[in-house]
Image (cartoon, rainbow, N blue to C red; front, top):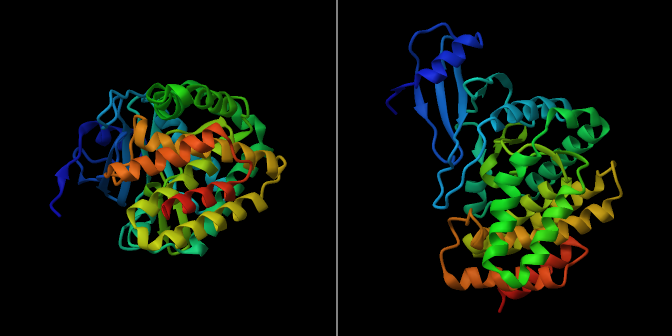
Length: 335
C-alpha cells in the first residue's frame, strides 16, 4: 500500500511528545472508525498508531461529540494496563491541545479483529471467557481505587455519545417504551461504581498472540459496569443475524462470557449487577435498529422486526437473568 503524507497536526503532536523529530511523516489512514481520524505512522523508531477525535461522527444522523474524550481514552489505557497487563495497546502519549493520542501499532498480521472472526463463524469460547475475565479485572481494579473517579469527569460526554444516541433516541421512535428506556438511563447514571470502557464491541477487540486486546475507549467514564457487560453481550446476539449458521456458537459464547465475568465480580454482589445488565440489554438491542447508530449488517426488515419483538417484550417485562434474554432470543429466532 502506498504511503501518504501525515496531516501536520499529527506530526506536531509526535514531535512535541518526543516521539519523533521529523518535519514530515508518512503513513496510512486506517479505516473503520466513525469517531476519529486514525493513522498508522512510520517514525524513526518504527510504526505507531495515532488518532484524533472528530467533533462530528461519521454516521447518517447528526451526531456530535466533545473532542476532549481523547484525553480520557488515554487515561483508560493506563488504568487498563495496571489492571490487566497487555489487555490494550501500549500508551505512548497524548497531546491535549491537538487532541491526538499515540499508542502501540498492532500489526494485523498478528492481530485479528474479533468482529471479522465472528462474521466468519469463528465463535471461540476461550476468547469469550478471556474477554469476560479482562472486563471484570478492569472493573475490579478501578472499583478498589475509587480515587480514579475524579480523573474521569465524563458524565456529560458519556451521556452525549452513549446514553442519549442509544437509549433516548430510541425512546423517541418508541413512545410506548419511552419510560422504560428513560429509566435505563437513570439506572446507569445512579450505579456509578467503577471505570467503564463504554464501547466493548467486537470491532474494538483484537485477538493477538497473548489473547484479546481492547481498543477505542473514547467513551471511558465512571459509571455502571453493567453497561460494558450488556454492550458486549448485545453484539453476540446480533451476530446471530449476520452469520445464522453459527447462532448456537454465539449463544454459547454469550453464556461463557456472562459466567466468566460474573464469577469474578468482587466489588458488589453479582446478582444485582446481572439484573441491571439484563434490564439494559434489550434497550441496547433495540437501539441498534432504531437509535442513532444502527448496526450496518442488519439490513432486512424481518431481522429488524425480530429485534423489535424480543427487545420490546423484555423492556415491558424485564428479565433478572441474562440467560433469560438468550433464551427469548433463541426462541424467537426459530419462529
